[in-house]
Image 1 (cartoon, one colour):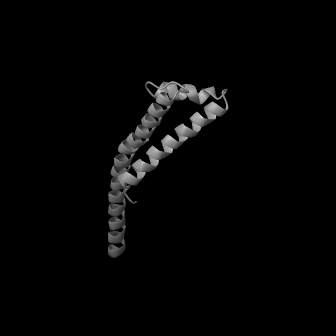
Image 2 (cartoon, rainbow, N blue to C red):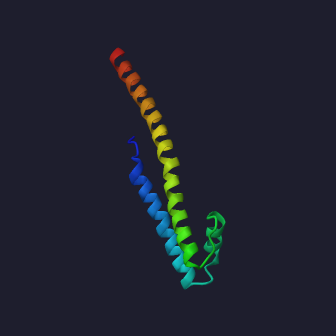
Image 3 (cartoon, rainbow, N blue to C red):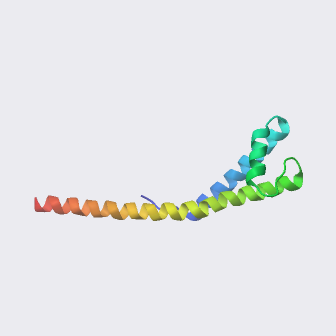
Length: 103
């Protein structure tokens, strides 16, 4: 298994969460009954309230940082587990090769 590079994953997740946040805010303005996601953002983003420019930019920055922090946690964990799987696979392959040579 390949290891993941941190920066491409971090930028991807950060921009993705910021775009989703922006689209959801646009839907909230276009469809005022779109209250479910508005309450969700208010719960998970400290200081965010719906429909003001200041809190929109605050929520945008917070969602961008949340995507980045997800990469901070995910990429090293994935690389640790991928590395251990690679070692286990290498040990299994070597033992199979040794059995073929002996048998």
